Image (cartoon, rainbow, N blue to C red; front, side, top):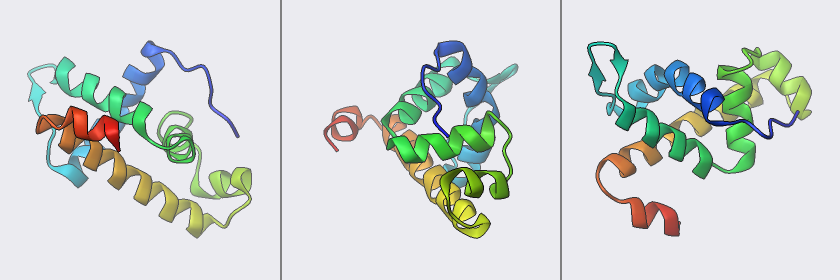
Length: 112
């Protein structure tokens, strides 16, 4: 399972879907009257790009493709529970990246 070549529209659509889950972990979501702000979506897009490929793959598989943990596990050759744990860790990492970007630590995040 490889999700390559996703452009900006796909990442923005994913960001809208994933933003609520990330916000629940990071408590960093700010919303305008029409939903997540462009600034938050931009940070989330950058954070998605900064994830390790395996982390990004499992987040995109779950949030964008709507795969179940069982399907993710089968595609990755791991158990359903292992897929769930990997997803939880990837979302936590994504939330941490967004939080660091929001606090102005862009240089530190890019060096890591």
